Length: 211
Image 1 (cartoon, rainbow, N blue to C red):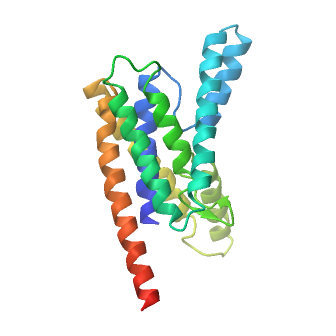
Image 2 (image 1 turned 120 degrees about the horizontal axis):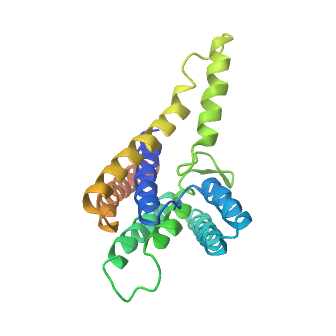
């Protein structure tokens, strides 16, 4: 659960940075980009609609990449390594004048990849970069609690939402201070630490099983 909340907070951070850098487009919230695509298209702003559609496509590519990596023997670590590298690449690309497209687009692929961190039976068990489902689940679990069901089950999905919300506040604040995608480096640091800890924990678990 801790890993999921930390990653959701990281996703919120990256999305806030990307949102500000791209002028109101999202790097991890494709529902928002889909709505914006439709609104821009119907108002004749085809460039804006195309930008939103391009972000959706890049996010989709990241989802495919994450799905492939998750099938490896240590898929969770592979997914986290790829996510870390892609977010770091976005930060590096932002400093290169020759890079042909907004560097935040690279982070979009990373956010799509991240969602494969928690797969169960080939399906996303814990969505990390979008929290509408978590809010719905929290509401349903709270309804169950009010009717005599498990008292605290609603807290788990609510924490995913809270993590993303807190991350977005921090990301927005850092970007307002730094003013560019160098704001991504704190997220990269968190991802490096998270990936390393995940690798170590899983390695210890395998050693215990083997022993």
